[in-house]
Image (cartoon, rainbow, N blue to C red; front, side, top):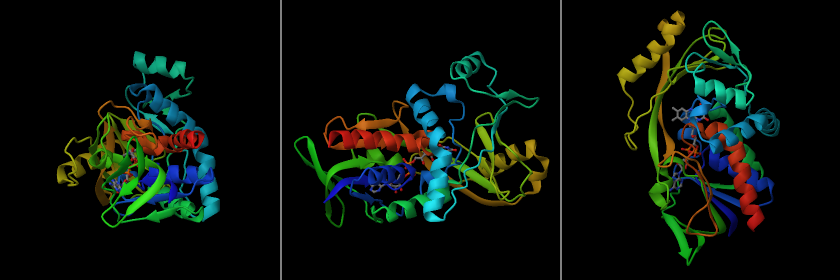
Length: 329
Ligand SMILES: Cc1cc2nc3c(=O)[nH]c(=O)nc-3n(C[C@H](O)[C@H](O)[C@H](O)COP(=O)(O)OP(=O)(O)OC[C@H]3O[C@@H](n4cnc5c(N)ncnc54)[C@H](O)[C@@H]3O)c2cc1C
């Protein structure tokens, strides 16, 4: 019997596991495949919403609070595990939309500093993480803190008595717990009924082989972006496709992402596309993050529906769900 059972081992599940374990809870985390392979692996790792004024208050609150702690968190995880999440304050150069009335007024209200250049507006404070590495480090970190991780185990449904959950049912056995935390990303509505349905929005991305110094900042233009990693590799993303759980990638997208990057940096036209992949962002019908208690069960908590911003909202989402659970138990 665990105090807390977490369903899903992406950034949200693992960050929640860390935070709950630090608060003294006995945590078990279940994943239907291997942890850290889905959206949290597929994402770009930009630690900010792309055009923040397009998002609701909660998204921005979660993101801003997370941005304040991200660097120190990565330093701590690196120290504790020896694995470097490569937090990098590369800054973000926004080439469009920064000069609309809505954007200007939002940035003034939030006292956001930026410098207008010939090419766009530079937000120097915006950082990135190498998300696959952060996830690898987080997994090692939570295991060292006593979290039990059980992979290749799909949660089929809640075990319920009246308005309480007793735990979850899997094909192999039932797992009992005092509370259940739903961190199942785009699959959350596949095994649990939610008042706001969660569904996948596919994003395709490529990585180009290049050298450090070719691109210095994250570049954002027309909803697409270029992310320079420390070692010179360059990520280019991404599409927004409402096609269910179809993982396929296509040549047309690969070319269009490569062209997007080459238009801005001509030397990238010859760069090799090392890899091309897709991932499923967890979108919600309300366009809001689902963070809090399940409407029908006292001891089931939701931490899902982070859509395009799960990597940047994860630390504060995990902190809030931990506070809610520990204050109630
Ligand atoms: C192309 C792309 C680019 C992105 N770029 C960024 C970015 O730059 N910055 C940013 O902040 N965000 C970005 N995102 C969004 C971000 O990746 C997501 O919001 C975030 O990863 C969601 O995390 P999660 O843990 O909820 O989901 P996931 O990482 O998908 O994890 C969910 C886990 O739950 C498991 N699971 C599901 N159902 C069950 C079940 N029934 N039983 C057991 N396990 C189950 C899955 O196997 C999976 O491991 C991007 C996403 C994509 C696709």
